[in-house]
Image 1: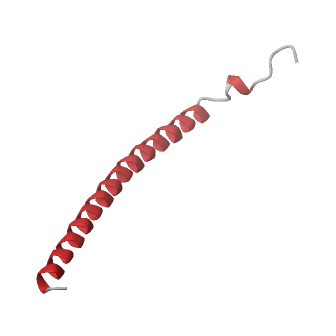
Image 2: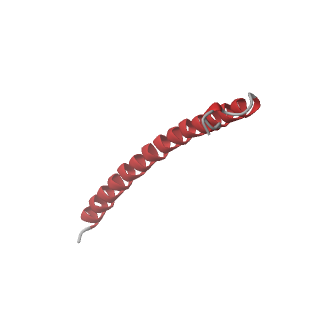
Length: 67
């Protein structure tokens, strides 16, 4: 194998690695955005639960009058 062939082989491998790194970077970015969305959702749910806990007993959990 000539030195030129070795350089071409290395350049091909480097191009594949750059593509892989870019794909992984995009995946990490998307996962980070999804984590941010989920954290916001959890915070809203926690706030909703706190607000409902402060407003008194929930009518859904009360027994109907015929019991």
